[in-house]
Length: 176
Picture 1 (cartoon, helix red, strand yellow):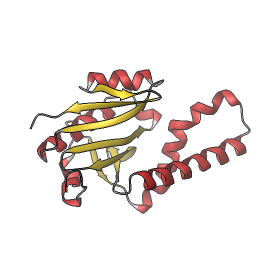
Picture 2 (cartoon, one colour):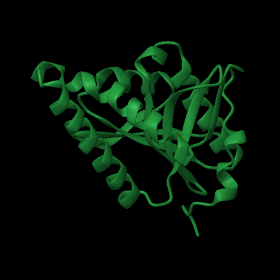
Picture 3 (cartoon, helix red, strand yellow):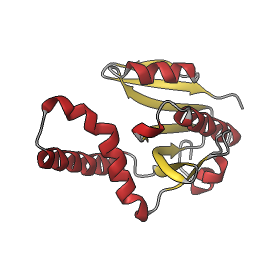
């Protein structure tokens, strides 16, 4: 069935960043504390201006984490959660749907300490190569219109904006 997800196509060993210090593996239940910390790291700054008491901020971020996890699970039941490791330490997560002709990057997040080092770019490029190796024709993602820095990064990585308003759909055509 076109677009169907198959486990055979998502072997993390296929997703190999060019930097040998960076690798990707399937997430496991033991990664839950890291994923919570990652969410806090990537979303906590969004609420800094609200000057919330620490307990309130913790509760808000925990609720947001659970809502995001449930929302992704409902909207993308075939998604695979992958952990990005750098020097054998978890530094990020990718949520990915793998289809026969299209791979969709649902979410990528890196710890603030891992940003700006090329780890995210290298991971996305490795995902594109792996998708090409399986004869996928495109890699897609959606990004908030207001996230100009991410949109610029995706354009540098070969994505083009193909639609949307609040969330911009971006597509990278893959050469087989």
